[in-house]
Image (cartoon, rainbow, N blue to C red; front, top):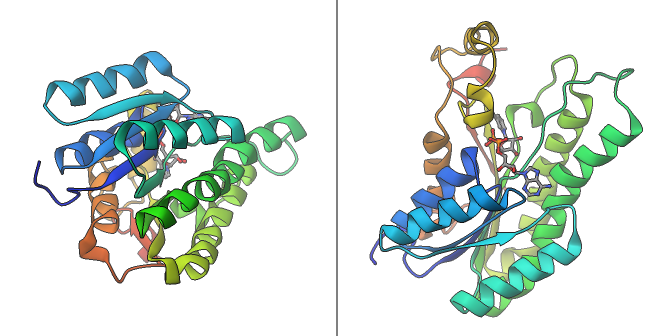
Length: 250
Ligand SMILES: NC(=O)c1ccc[n+]([C@@H]2O[C@H](COP(=O)([O-])OP(=O)(O)OC[C@H]3O[C@@H](n4cnc5c(N)ncnc54)[C@H](O)[C@@H]3O)[C@@H](O)[C@H]2O)c1
């Protein structure tokens, strides 16, 4: 199949729902062979089945981003099925609202394990295969919360800020191997989880956005499509903010 990602094999975490599922569908439509990885097995299998019905190729694998063993299995299954791994999108993430005093050690540890350690484990496990493939592209989903602060959600801000700089570190380490690493910083995005918020909260989140609305998951996926395609062959170690202008206002 021709497309902007023809010849690529992409592993996408959080692929069962929200932004990750939009990445899976768009990447497959653009010619990549795609592995959707998540902990929601039933939903994830359905996303892969939907893609396969379109004539594109997708596979679902169970992966908890915080577990090295799951990463090892997911990368091995990707290579066994599609022959190589060229592209990794670390999309999976959880959110916690707790501020500095209210956050618990258990809550902190869980969020950091999934949102931050998970991104590192993903890069650590995928990069050897990308080297074998002669290069690759990694997109790590951070957030506008990784670039500037608001009160509360201290663990989330900590993890997203870490993902921002971890992406730059890896970009510098692997540039000579032809492996590009960039981060995307979405603002408020109307994913399945976000659409379940009370109407009042959705309004309050959209209100400060200059474009006056949330992004769609597809609008974030188009940014990742560019960064993972050969159109971005010289783009590494940078950040793409997709937030309707929110962070331009300071
Ligand atoms: N929605 C927003 O407004 C927004 C804004 C900025 C950044 N983000 C980031 O975008 C990413 C996707 O968010 P979303 O809104 O699509 O969320 P979502 O809750 O709709 O989807 C997240 C997916 O990650 C999966 N997941 C959760 N824990 C996991 C784990 N341990 N291992 C593997 N998969 C796991 C879930 O099962 C789910 O399928 C997250 O990293 C989030 O922090 C979201």
